[in-house]
Image (cartoon, rainbow, N blue to C red; front, side, top):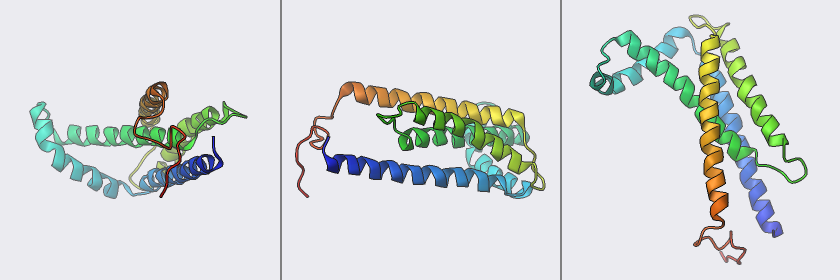
Length: 170
């Protein structure tokens, strides 16, 4: 692989690492919002999604609110897993290290997230939420690694000259 390609890959990996860190901060900062603020955010989504809930026969506002909050947890961590896969590419010298880092993220981020909420007025940490977070992360991991495997099995894309090792002029 040419030096320029390696440098471009490293630059992209560093960019994804930056996005990953920003996303973790987003999750933790959201956990610092007091209960009424967090509930207000969720209720905005309930208002938007109310017609969909009604299609499925859900009319109880508290149940809608509960579903939105749990789906938000799941989705935040699904996105976190995708970003982890993009940011932590395997390396030749230590191919297992990204897996260790990903497992650490999988465990530490949701535990810290729920621990933060223990100290915020109107919020509370929940072991169930940690499990929901970890489930979202697990699904995101499965999706990301499956997509990566399919892309690697296909080989370089036909239209991508850089992937085939041809010189690209700018």
